[in-house]
Length: 479
Image (cartoon, rainbow, N blue to C red; front, side, top):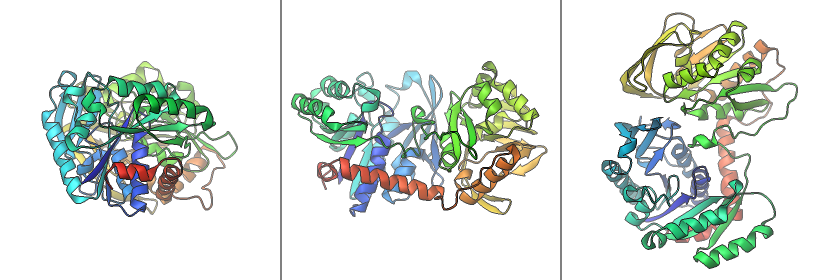
């Protein structure tokens, strides 16, 4: 019955990856460890083997720990649809909506489900590494909290604060968290980690000594900037933090449209991990014109993001690109936008609107969500993916493509995760390179996507073993 809570001083402080790294490090030491996040607010999600939906970050953490992903790891997932409304995924299945006015006082049933899931994990594993959400010091939300101090107090968990030094002000932020918390919450704080450090640590050390003297909290490590570890983010702030490649012959430039309600943007990770691909986010008509490939990723509000495309002139740029034969790929919501007609009384409640008209299909949103893990093939290459959508696309022409359709150089698929299949990805990109006259070819001996992700998890665990006191963290957790 051991556990620890890793909280962040802000969103995108790196707590998701720290939890993944700790799970891998603890598992390598022979500990049966499970990750946990009571409530996740993210549009990046994944379908588990049992058909449940959880945050993508918790799926990665399960892989790091060597356990099968399930809804127990992320019992409450909130998927923002507008600035004031989120769809609830409860126990891996649709659970209604949460309005902004209900956020502080309408979550009792969600807290009960989260605590019950934690109890089940606590009974099954040697150690649970829980991840907080946002900042634990959001005192305006404290009364209904069940993911930060509320979880820690419920189960007697020590809390480790992760601070992002790259954004600046990390010492004041950690001190502020300690100072603003009430006495009972402050008593759960057990130490802090500095994350994303670059430079000479001897310059930082005097500040850490003074911070510890003022708070009594030990520094448990200074984790360096790991620019090659960037997979499976849950936070929109971390979208497009892929390493940029220097311009050179044989490089394919891939522009990913940055929707305001982008969903499952992790589909781009497999492309960004491929040597010779420069994947970048954009909302520029000039990039849509000049890139070798434009990707329209998923969206949690297809019609709202389609309206955004039109207001920024991106819809016209896409039409011009398609007419000129420039390759376009739409995935899930992005595919839906490429169709002729979209009828959505569910997600956006905007009714029926015209799509971009670049693919012969219509879309109808249904109340029932489709969750699945489909399989298929393309040009003889086996492909597996996953589906998370309310919108059902009905093609009425074109060439079939992974439960979607292709016309010319415009492609659409409802499947997420298809490009994680190495053989398919490389064959499809080779055909793309020929289409645009690029010399790009798959790099001989380059690791596949799953292998690269495993390498990243090991690099992360290695960094924690070297730069953090993993033994002290285990002892704090009761092991």
